[in-house]
Length: 356
Image (cartoon, rainbow, N blue to C red):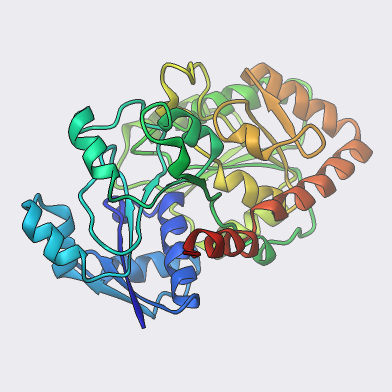
């Protein structure tokens, strides 16, 4: 059996990127690989199973591999360790490591403007890289200013669209995003502003802000103060099944990451793809999102609305509330569009990536 190693330094954040990596691991197992996951404790996989609804029982956690990957090791030690594997899938932190497996894949989830390590040493490391794997064309476009284009491969995040389904829709607007995102602000404050604007003309709707939160947060207290007097509910650290129910009931999906950010000068601060947007669409939610980053690759004019300001978000939502037939048509188109990012499509492209 072929042997694969996966390293993701951000696994304990359990965000959308980590679901991507774990689904990639499951795809490798399906393709005949055994998978070692470089991490110091099995606990993180148990938490991931609960958060993402994935069966990770066939993935082996390796503390030894974590030590080898996480700490700086000399060239010879890294060569001896990594050459034992048939494939390595390495999530980049903005730098490129020396890897010596038969198939070295460096994955970029963040559109870093610069690649760390210096041009000469980086060029040397890329000699050993088979493919740079990007989570969106947006990420790819930014990073390929510094790396070889011929080694680029875009593999959109896998969304289990088949597990989502519309329920009886209620007058709910939903946003799903980490409250304490380590990479870029999700701007729930902007959505509260948009909802205040909408509430002046459209009555009877509730905004639900759901997402991960580690510990106490000054940001959360600030958001709750901003939401005072509005029908807004906060849902922290929801389990996957709870999220699916929220998606199923909501009519609209809002997202504001990237608002007021210049995506050319600060690409890492906008939405790199938008997995939650696809999940919402697969549940029949109409996405109304800030037009930045990877969101523009997901939402088409038929399947949702791209906006530049919270006022535009409120107006677009109000217009569709007033035109139920238009909402129904767009909801159906959103569900259909989401299938472009399904796990089956992911696995098809993964098979292409693994092909010699």
